[in-house]
Amino acid sequence: MVEDSLVSKTIKHYQVDELVGRGGMGVVYRARDTKLNRPVAIKVLKPDLTANPDRLQRFIQEARSAAAVTHPSIAQVYEIDTVDEMTFIVMEFVEGQTVGHLIAKKELDLIGSVEITLQVAEGLSKAHKSNIIHRDIKSDNIMVTHDGHAKLLDFGLAKLLEPSSDAEKTLTLLEHAPTKTMPQTTAAGTIMGTTSYMSPEQARGQTLSYPSDIFSLGIVLYEMVTGELPFEGDSPLDTMHAIAFEEARPVTVIRKNLPPELHRIIARCLRKRPEDRYPDAGELAADLKRLKADIESGVRRPFSPAQKIDELKYWAMTSLPVGPQGIMIVALILVVAAILIFTDIQWANLLWIGILGLLLFRYIKNRKKRMLKRFISQVSKIKAVRAIRIKEDSITVIVDKAQASQYIRINSLVDEINRKLYFGRHIEVAVRDDLPEEEFQHMLRETGIAFVRDDVILR
Image 1 (cartoon, helix red, strand yellow):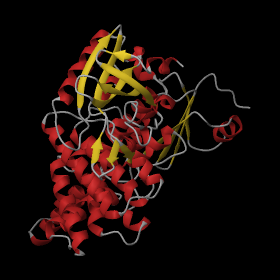
Image 2: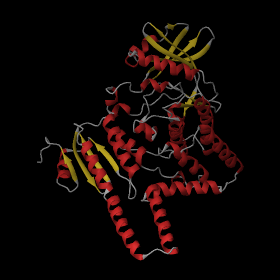
Image 3: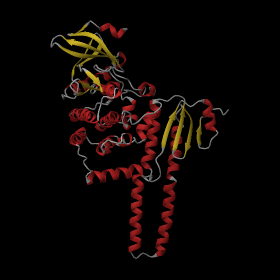
Image 4: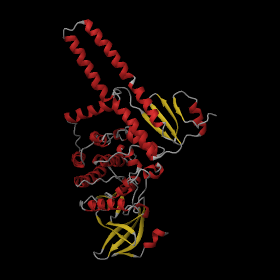
């Protein structure tokens, strides 16, 4: 194969020994630095990723910034260079096993899982202080050395795989499926944002910040202590939908003997809104350090009053059907009722207040219908959309072929509706391109069809 052609050859002062992995960014070799006499990993980038000079330059700048971050839990980037039109990165070679491999072999216990996450969080904290975001944290990107030290691989390198134009954003979601890395070696490159480990803002194509890394690290911790992923679907689209809209099952439900404090930490990492998660990896590391000490000592630390209030607040905002805006409206109604009871107001005036209140209630009640009507109008203009069905609070959009740009656009519109809801359950949307024709025809005859494209024939 072409990838094997560099084995036994020399790139600059690096003697290539063997091919150790392939991934979304290119191929990885084990080599020897003949000047310093040490093993290194050389990642040769795919030519199509480096063809755009502006994009490559932005990536090089980011890789250099990542190389400036030094921490025991971050695999060091030594060099990035181009020789004979071949761009490559020279990195620290980490011997050991990936967390994904350890999970598969069931070799991680609770204290080991917390310790690995703590080490990675401390490395993340150092990187975030240097304004570097990883973007692709997953179990196969964390290597555990033979002496039990965790190393986060490919820091900052996923930047290269961000779409640089609108045309590139139309890649189908199948191209964003998870890319596995090689166990017991330096991991190969991965595509931008492996689906099962994406944050909600990644799934929606929004701007990323530090809490995106914290969400992904929370998924890894969840996977280590339960042996399963918190968000999974039959397709990448289904998985992204679960990440954006569904709540993960508590780890204490999957494994009854896990401490409640672990559930609290993971739940905070996996909150949908970035501002509801840990503001930085340093605060997450502090909680993990306390949890580790409690596990080692056998102490079950009770929630503090502040933590109980925070959990109650989050439950009210995410579990009650009225939502946060509805809670405020209910509180306002209670205040008005108290004023009417304890003050001297003429009942004739109260009648007018009631009429105005009913008109306002009717306006607010129909607001959801108006927003859904606007949603149908906007989505129906997408050429690939064949039909739209609305059933209670669930929307199904049938498309010819599911593309990332469509998914992001449709979900962003639904997200906007949910943000503006005063009361009632949030809307959920499913984008489907896998509906059999017989099932599609049956769906067209059901109630709730809000749009059908002109060229769709009812058989």
